Length: 320
Image (tube, rainbow, N blue to C red; front, side, top):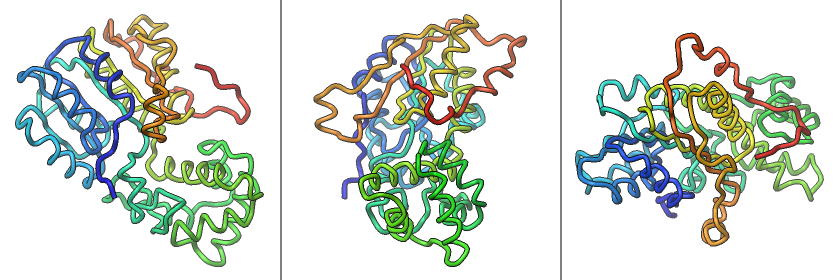
């Protein structure tokens, strides 16, 4: 088992962050340290990186991987939804660039005991932060049929949502689900075989997003990141599915229209064919980049931003 996650769109992300210059960067999803290693390797000794992650295992790997950079790197346990509280005690000075690499890492997916993969047998966990009490098992044990339908439709965009929410609810009332294989085998038995792989990916995605409050946390994280960012600083966001990309795109659009930022790449960057061949998990990645040109004024205390659209109706067309 490899414990090192291969960072996606690393060259493009680091290049665009460094174009803005500056002395302090924040990696909001440091994981096992891939992007941070690239940033630190390509910058002078007076440049620092603050790395944040909820996953203690990932942080331990990042700590070892980045130890050669000494005091240039600070690693913190926490989520980007509380970015301001995490960073404030450190007083890093003007922040020139902030990176989000969303979703789960290869390291997490490849650990069966984390419960993220429908291919491997493990507990129904799916927590990024293992100190959190709420797990996938608890979700399935406590959610009503209506709530299961909502999350499968909204966060999985799954056409078999109605059937699956009904049969999963009926089954868990008789016998609760305990493992990933129990759940994946049950889903396979209740949908056409040809749909099994994609449906399982969507069902597990929907449960994981809900367990970790990923979309609401992303909205809060983007707001806090923009507040922390220095004028002319840059935010880069790498997303892997349409839901998180939509939140990012809408956030940038609202602030661009209000005159607070400039979009660096209106058409989001995608991995090259070479990168997709080397790392299959990069194939759905999208990179969006903005440059901050003004602080958000008090008049726009972002009620508009807080109401960012998180979901779309099924069947709505997706555009870049």
